[in-house]
Image 1: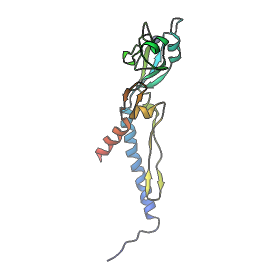
Image 2 (image 1 turned 30 degrees about the horizontal axis):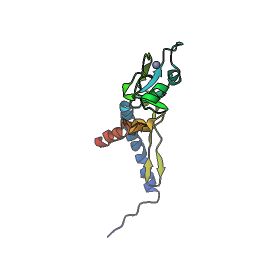
Image 3 (image 1 turned 45 degrees about the horizontal axis):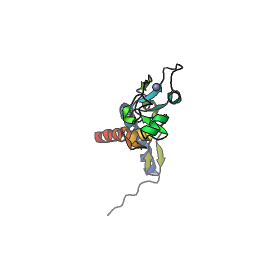
Image 4 (image 1 turned 90 degrees about the vertical axis):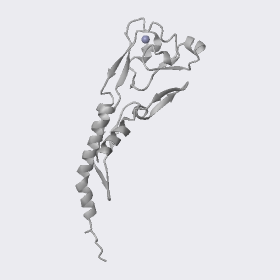
Length: 176
Ligand SMILES: [Zn+2]
């Protein structure tokens, strides 16, 4: 029985040959992840002298669309509605937050940025370690992990994950 022994360095050479291919696959994952990533939303007040202090503090807060804004609670809601120090709202006037006082007469809105997460998804360069090629697709930004896997807020309010990275990888894997 003959035994084939690769020329020393051949494996490393093969790895370098496939590296660009691996990176092309990773770029496809990046494209799908950008398509599937949820938008972000930003809390916007009307910025006049009638905006309540708890919403002045929320001005500009930006979160992935599947998550909740964290707004300081109003005393009435703490005493009568059992909310903690913070109230968690999907959007201004969100009744699912269980607040009442913090919603009343609110004129705030949200500004949605469809590319809020997508623009910070990138593909790295191939890293060759022995026989292994690694290319990493990365999403950076505030709360991207919670955007992916979801979270639970105090009081048991659940935000489902969007699984945009996992879905992107699964879509590209299914093409192989
Ligand atoms: Zn408001």
